Amino acid sequence: MTLNKKWLLSLTLALFIALLTACGNDEGSGGDSNNEEAKQEESSENSESSQEGESSQEGEGSEQPQMPEPDLEGVPEVVATVNDEEIKKEEFTQTYKSQFQQAAMQSQMSGQEVDQEKLKKQTAEGLVGQELLVQEANERDLKASEEEVNETLTSLAEQNGLKSKDEFLSKLEEQGMKEDEVMSQVKTQVKVDKLLAEENGDLEPTEEEIKKAYDDAKAQQEEAGGEQQIPPYEEAKSTLKQQLTQQKEAQAYQELVKKLREDADVKVNL
Image (cartoon, rainbow, N blue to C red; front, top):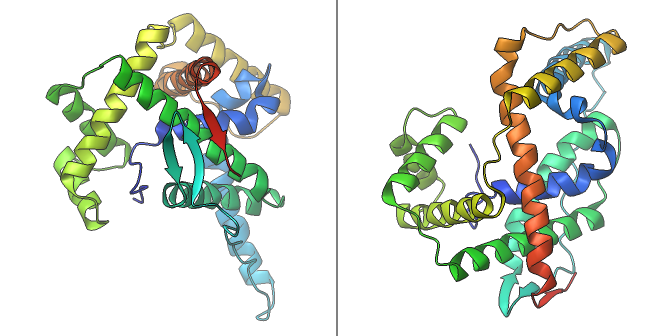
């Protein structure tokens, strides 16, 4: 488990960058994204078996392609300012390295080189959007109760395959994050979540939306003639619900950031 020390809960940032990257491909293709988890699992399995086959068939002199390195040359000390609040190079660098690692892994599978200039701009825009939300949540004086913070920590622990929030905090401490730093960032995330809910209401998908996503994914799978069978609806329902919720959150995030930015003083120095 590796987490960004500067910004523990960059879930909204990750969603925003993913939305920026995929917005041109996802329009009108909800079924593809709804079946993403199954595709990722299948891709992972195929990748592993392919690598095993290649290692046995290729000669001893063959080499695995090296992972590219993030290019951080020329990044300014202040990457952006948002209403006089500075986003510094250190914060950008830590976030960019995490985003680049994910992009580099995807590029190895697809064979396409990472467009680092584009990714840098997307990362900077994500950090700007994140800062706008934090400022707005503080402006509205939104609060995070102890119970809400504990619920969020428990949820994060489960997402990272850990048994409790205490184990989660312990793992973060091993990475050099103090508990008060973690608690402060979790409180901020809870307030941002409240802001999104205040603006958009309930983002949880309806039964009808989940069923439609399932039917679309099943139809696409049948049309593609893939060997992998889609599980029964009741088994897939939980995963589909989570994916649809994330899509709605990403869209709500993007729309609110766009709205806040209209009245904000933002300068990006990349």
